[in-house]
Image (cartoon, rainbow over all chains, first blue to last red):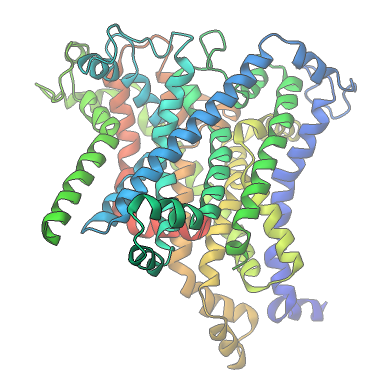
Length: 300
Length: 275
């Protein structure tokens, strides 16, 4: 006992104690729910069996039922559009801004940091603001588009099934662009400047320098940012809750919102768990890509 | 073109881009000051003709915002405390050693960081209801947020500990400090700033958290401001000036903290997520 105490005070026991509690906590509160989720996706769960662990097993019935539902494939398609649209918008605008702020001028780094306010704001507030901006009759975005002659009639962003998903994508692009830009700026700053000097001496123009130096040197950063973008867009929930609630008629519903909707609006916890399992497999795949592309830095 | 002129031109373009990007924020502040009829004017006014400052007091009273914000603070402080107490030691050990176990631990932590809250809430809710945790809804939310955000915190703080020279700790051990003494007297004070910035980032996240609070907390008097804002926005609402006033009151403290500590937050964030 004495040896144990002295090891904790002054030996490896100290490290083990420090690391055991957080890992134990994470296992209990994140690892076990993950396993429980998989278990529930194979069970029949309703309001009466909510309080017990031993529910009737149904095999793959939840999965079969899920894919027999008519809305499943459209919602999976929406998720793909949402992810691709959001990542493309965030990345391209973010990269453009990062390249612009890369040119050093007084105040550049401070102004660049200011963009990040979109990322630290609560998602619900971002959603509320965009809900109002995108409003059909009185929204300021419709007004600006009308004034510049891009559209002739109002677009009902939130209630038109053709546009509702894009309403959320616009808000999500705004929310995530700054984060992309900051990370891309860090990547740009780490490219050694003498590469450009050498290329300039050899007569390469700006366009050639971008394609032959900037892009290849940024490859691992870009890989990490795209996979981080995938992870973050699949986590995006607040904007759906604040702007469209997945409607109208599931036209802007995505899996991460649908899973919650099934569990907490329709009380079909088994279906909610089933979608969660499918999506978590996707997210895990993205995170393996992310971990691989940042491995060298993380290990330091 | 001379250098100063070029710098001025770049600064002007940058200011214009920042203005465009931050327009939604401006629109929130402006709408909150408009009257009910001015809000729906066509064309919309970009500067309120008669600022309605009374809207703030009205919304604060009628929506019971004091209670909502108090709950948000309780949840945010609770989760930051729990995360800091558990996460700092974990980050320290993961920074101090380099072996296969540390790699495995880091990998698991990075994997946990990516699980979407809206997918994890189903098993967490069912599990908590079986354990009777739903009788203490705010505590349940704090624990759920801690499990969600701790991996991010550990990754950020680990980067801070990596920057503390190990020789300093070794010197303290040679001078007769125990491991515990060296950790609390030497390593922690040196890493204090990084820990603080990471805690502030986690605090801002937890202050705006929505999914867990919405699903777990049923009693209105225990709900945080994010859930309050959600129930304020019905499907066919037209009180946008009041909603924007609510959003303003909710978000301005966070924005103030961010603008004040901007440099530190940005550098802390970038050191952890990516190099």
